[in-house]
Image (tube, rainbow, N blue to C red; front, top):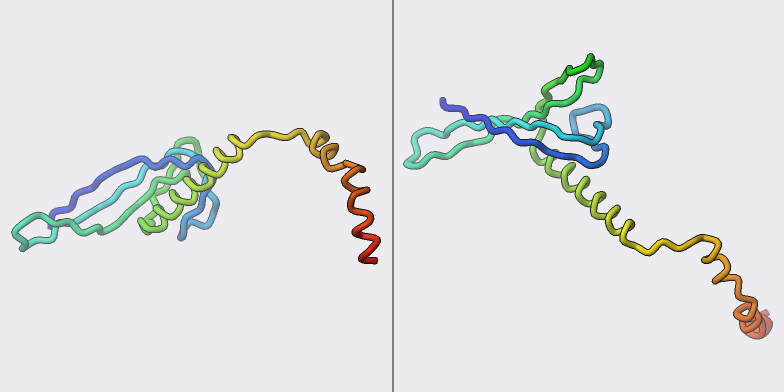
Length: 125
């Protein structure tokens, strides 16, 4: 049976987790390998995914130590989606205007507004 292997690099901008890995992984670049085997007997080449593996920093590592962990490609995709969502959320937060907290407090410390509310409050009491 013919097997082909493809490699790609996945970049995480925030710490992330994957099913089957019992720790939170740091942000960074991760190499992912996918093995596919040729389904024989068809009139055109078709490959079926056999496994997806990711290179992780070894849990008890010496410099340069890595471990190769088999993962579900759907779990990897979900982790990438979560990372992209959190990254987009931080971009939105960064684009929002920043308000100085003391200025904000002064804006809500309006005695005229409180005085305007007192007659209504007195009627309800």
